[in-house]
Amino acid sequence: MKKKMLNKLVAMVLVYGSVLAVGMIPANAAMKTESGKTYYYNELGQKVKGWLNDNGKWYYFNENGEMQKNTTMKIDGEDFEFNENGVLISKNGQETKQALYEYGKNSKIKDGKIYYVNASGKETGWVEVDGKVYYYNNNGEMQKNTTVKDINGKEVKLNEKGVAVGEHGYELIMGEEVTYDSSEAYKKSHEHWRKVGNDWYYYLTGDDMLADGWEQNNGVWYYFNNEGKMQKNTTVKDGKGNDCILNEDGALTNRSKPEIDTSKYKDARSYSWKEINGNWYYMASDGDKVNGWIKTNGKWYYCNNDGVMQKNTTIIEGDNKYVLDASGAWINN
Image (cartoon, rainbow, N blue to C red; front, side, top):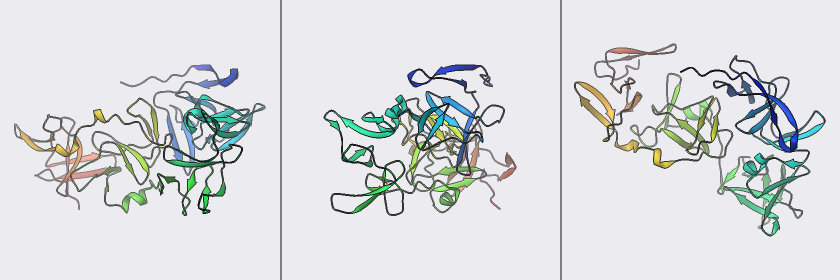
């Protein structure tokens, strides 16, 4: 059923009593990244400008509709600080509730500086949070965009987020440098990725194990629907109901990782072809049927919404046509 646009303007109370006018978010509005810049399009396809509240997080878009990230701006005479994801984390040096989420429950922001505070007070030196390593000076202030020495005297670079990075400039996660390359060029150069039409699929091992749900590759988290198609330019929920924004390359952008409810995942490895009343299905032992594109034994097949394998027909997706032979296999000319 088509979702209705919520077009009433409401007044939302920002941290510490400051009031800003903001439009409630229509159901089919979307956050998109274009040429390295992030925009928010409303239901009419127009770029949002000014303040935006999305699921309790505040963002600000300039006069060109560009999300402000990793910066401090003076707006209506007050200083607002935004992190690398564009989330408001402090107003006039006072941390917002989102700062606790973005930097961890032990983080505090004062006068624009970030501190790591535990039961004994401010932490100094190296601190590891969720696998990432940060450095706090003798005053307990997080260091960014600089180089410091580790306990062995080796110089370590810290990026604009304060995270220790490797020799190539990519973040160190659990001691390993990850590239976070989610580009199409990267996918084309790695055998686990397959593109059919305009859709990307990811194979866990071999040809018959198609990923669905959340999957991490090269340090990047992706989400695949029940048909195995990578989702992009959209927002999906993780296992705990958190909103997860996926960019044009399918990469998760607003969280370091999704919360995964493993109890909801089926065993994709138990699926096989079965014939029922003359129709072929790709299904599990519990009767769960797969629909959409399937690749087995190096060949592509297509099952309709009822799970029935199609044959002797042509599948049309946008401007692309896919001819299926008598066995149901795609004839790849």
